[in-house]
Image 1 (cartoon, rainbow, N blue to C red):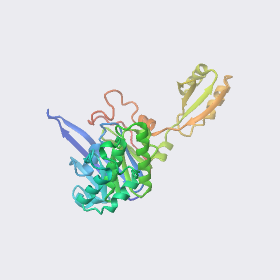
Image 2: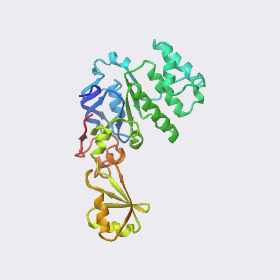
Image 3: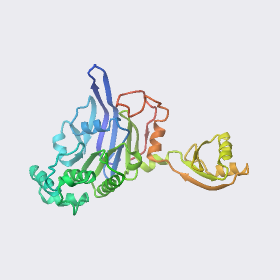
Image 4: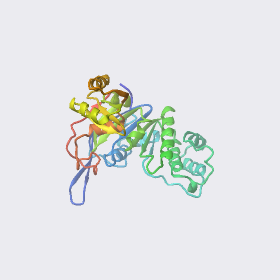
Length: 330
């Protein structure tokens, strides 16, 4: 069993509206984040991710349940563990007229951290060569890097990032993603909260996927996706006729450009069965490629059939159980 840096059990958070209605933001959440690498905390906006993080950091009090950070119960002993935890949950306040380096130096001095840590943090987040520029002139991506550098000044064992790519353009998202991957390989355990499942898949070693404040799936990314059925891209000269043949044989088929995407019923289904079936009707395949599920399609599969008005991310309110909960060994 791997060592856990974050663990919650039966975690629940309720809010009261002005009209006295109870809204459940986090519902009986059991979270287990192993030490090492990057762990994705994934789900749509409003699924309870930020509320969970705020409870872990002592910024909100749970209605009930247990939590621990780095093996320490929180919020009871949070003062003893916070020096080992870095977090970017809200936009930090930097002085616009000061350089990136000067802002970090002032922060280090005010918190009793040796100023030599500033250079190490700048190096880790890839701001080397830009640290002498004024913060006011930084791009949004550079500002996000500086915010992460500020959390790294204390050399944390655990780094918690809440939607760090919000508002960034594709190039900025890629840069932050690459930086997070480097941090995970450097020995820091990173909890990365995001709603961009496809993007995060490229950097996460393991994930916990939530919807409506509930855990839907958790485990290593490769193990979770290995249990998902794939699609087969079929290139053929007569896609309309081929689609009819496959549909009549029980396959789920959809057009994609000039090709067909054919869903396999299980991960162990043999794609060659499609070729044999079509050949039996004098339909000859010119291309056949298996397309494995990604995290986004995996999530949609988990929440399939919830229907309008029961979106797992809708408003963070509690609703009916989806009936799905998958776990892979982390």
